[in-house]
Length: 288
Image (cartoon, rainbow, N blue to C red; front, side, top):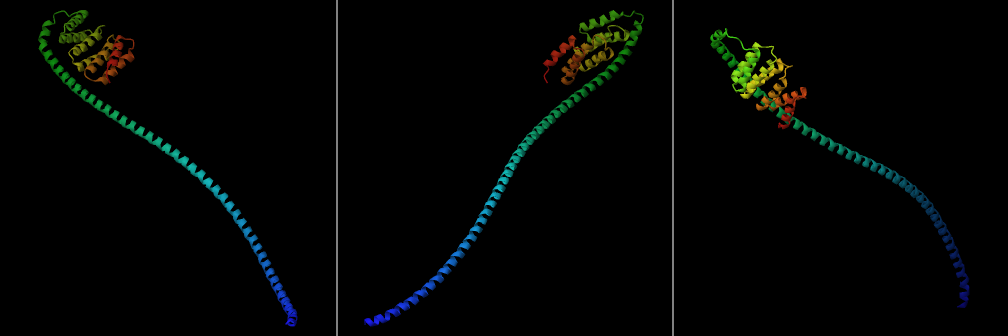
């Protein structure tokens, strides 16, 4: 038994040595392959790291560009928002001014319409006055013709009598006015003007004719007679009084527009006269 063991032991050792050598070779091959795979892996890792680094750098550059673009866009958006706010402000201002102008236009239109209505009313009043004056003038002309015919005989009978002197004729007509006999006063003053056209009292006579109509509240006729004083005797002492009474006559007719115009003209042309002071007080008391 022991001999066989001694015989088999070298064989076993030999076989074992062969097996170990093959294993070593195999292990060396595997190790070489492992090292190669490791080397390849490291190379791949380096390539991947390089690629990753490039990608990272690209990402960083992209992020920078993106942030730059975003910042630029934000700035543009802020600028656009500022411009929008500015435009809105201008639009609101323009809208306000437009509304103001429209309102002013509407008010001015309404004012013009009121003025036109007032002018129409004044024109209608003036038409009525003209019609009344024309009626009066025709009546007065007819009456004068009748009076002339009826008085021809009386005049012929009085031709032998002496005419009144200038002063007596004026005083006679003035006395009739003071007594309230306006018809006799008018006839006396008219006769005085005809017979003594160069008298120093001729403008006064014409003024008193206007006064007779004013006292009778025939304001249209009074205005015409006062106008004769203003036009025929511009250097006389009754011009200011005639203007004042014209203004009063228009006011009594309800024509405040013409009344103001005449009283204002009196104040402008004759500011130091007593009539101008009266006109100022009258204008202050007049309602619009």
